[in-house]
Length: 634
Image 1 (cartoon, helix red, strand yellow):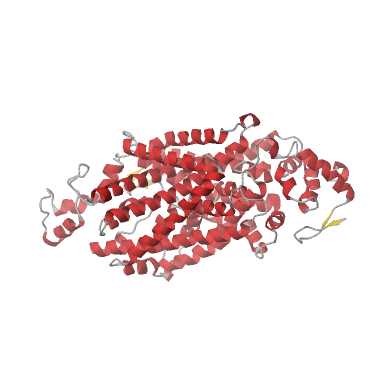
Image 2: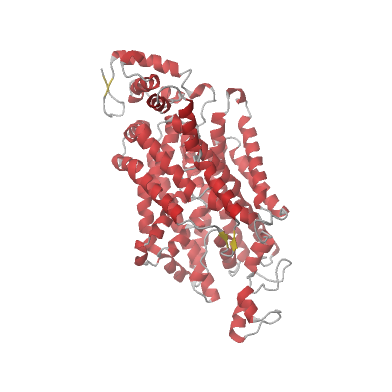
């Protein structure tokens, strides 16, 4: 008989024999193939806006503020927006939507979300490894930000100058020179009371902000081979950071959703304040023109397209599994398609807005020093902890503006950190056996996980800690690992489960088939994985050994450790796939059919009406599991 889909989709032909047999299949699944038996009911957001705010807090992070503006300036200004926006629509939004939609459809986290094609559960284990590595090193930036915030507030309350704005402090060297002293030397060859020549100054001079960062905050050693002592101040900052993150996630979505309102929205208030102040500074206009000035010759530069692609994957937080976890807390019929576009536009818009804030300040800084903006433009930690602190130290009321800036960095970092922690905890809870289903298991697990990451993170706050941090940043959660993960996600959904099949599932969930469905399926099937593979190959071909500050070259054994960090997540998928295939029974074709048949959750029985495509598909799934093609399976 013909059974119409309740959303007006294509009619599905189901014979009475199939329909009667299907009830037996689904009844069997309730005790064997349904995940609801071993784990508590999945939590859902108290309000759906909690989901939007949590995704904003996770996806909009430090990369939007300290990486996008620099890449835009580096790659031809406004011209950079052409490949950036093109790749946003061809790869960024489709994969962002895919991760959220898969999570919402399967209502699971990490590993269990890939029960949509169980042979590829290794993608879930890979995302857990990526999240562990990310959580371990990303929170170090939060600890640094907290350190600078405390120093800024101390100066604001005492009325003293910012500690990185002057020389003569206990951590400064003889080569610490203010820009005014440097200019005086260049003009008349005198250095006042400094016991050095202008030639020494040209070669070895350090600004007070650089010495504060390297000698006071980091106490940096000469290399990775010299780990040195722990910094008790940074240890305390790291501990406070983990305590904050723990209490953000210890109650699950009930606490995550509420905290996200503040961590996601307040940075925009600070950005608006800093932008208003920056635009009033002398040199701000020149800085913004420099930021947007188009250089059309860059359009044919392959490096610019690679930078655009990698920036999208970094800033959209694709491939780490947390988006699927956050999507899994949605109601089954929530319109995640609409929110995927809204969140993507907010993410890219934030990057663009941050560029105005950063380059208005850098324009002022260049104007004050009488140098080109190219000499003060920085990216990453160099912008956050050297260029920007130096710029605010030149403003009236420097301590207040500095405190606002580092409070914004703190919120951006915490928003991304606790969402990623929630992703790991949710994935782990899904894997725990039934005997661990006690009342406080989430709180205990969150505490143990926070303690583990804290202990590992101690290696990054020693005197050689910055070298360890850069090792993680360069290898652990980088373009290579994220591109590998994202490309396989597209392949599994589009080619193993089926792009048409999944789009029909999405249409049932959200109540309509997206107008751009053919284009989205084309991206999932061809364009997005093709872009990921192309960028990944370019990464490997143009790989260069890691250095610090263009002077320190990492030893060979450090590179081996770095590649081990990369491979720790990349080998998960092929390793699990081979293990499952080798331990399954039957011919290779039967093994493939059995291991790629989806394992449905209890919510599918509740949220999919009895006469929908989902139910009729149960016949196909049971046939796949039995390896038979006739109706005898029912």
